[in-house]
Length: 237
Ligand code: ADP
Ligand code: MG
Image (cartoon, rainbow, N blue to C red; front, side):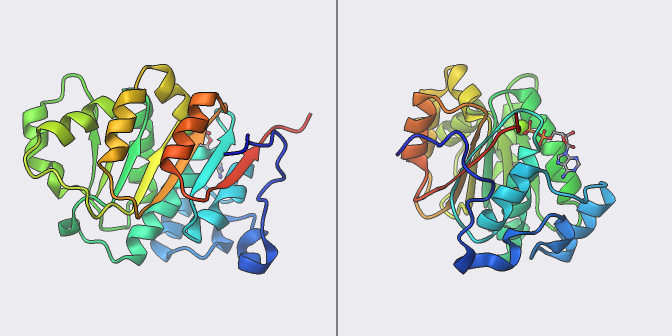
């Protein structure tokens, strides 16, 4: 992969392919379900942030994304919305099993993402679970994990289920999210991530978000993304 340009214009939009939505500035203008729009409005989200404006038209078209933007720029909705829409378009049902996996570096970040997913996905009929280490009873979790459609997890706990949970199945996975990828790698999860990715179906959509573009993030991008759109949003000087 070429290095991520540090000042890529917002959106880097190809006007021939999806010009209708490339210039959208509000969630209400996007081609997304009423269920998602209603929840966004009820959560008081109206205008998109720069990274959301850059990512959502591409992500909603089914592309892989390598996204860079600093903490606090609104990256969560840039992947939560397209993953909900993808499962909705596929008419995913609770009995269809794991359709999406979001991997976060820490329990705290995973639970924050889970809260956003719950708020924005509240009118959808998907089951979601937070799979993180710690006090939670992993044995009880093993009984339920195959009934979940969306998993928000830390790499260690996900790999534990892949290794130990009988019948753990993600062969139908539609969307993989690697959130805060630089931090996932910083905390030493490189091997776990590689093991996880090697067990996932290749035909899927993948979003990789990272505040910084290190060599190891580039390696991970090369391993996990297919012909990605590079979207980098930095503060104006
Ligand atoms: P990041 O993952 O880039 O650090 P978050 O997704 O956690 O950023 O969002 C940071 C904060 O901005 C959160 O409090 C979130 O609720 C808020 N936020 C995100 N998108 C919007 C938006 N479009 N309008 C208003 N607030 C937003
Ligand atoms: Mg984040």
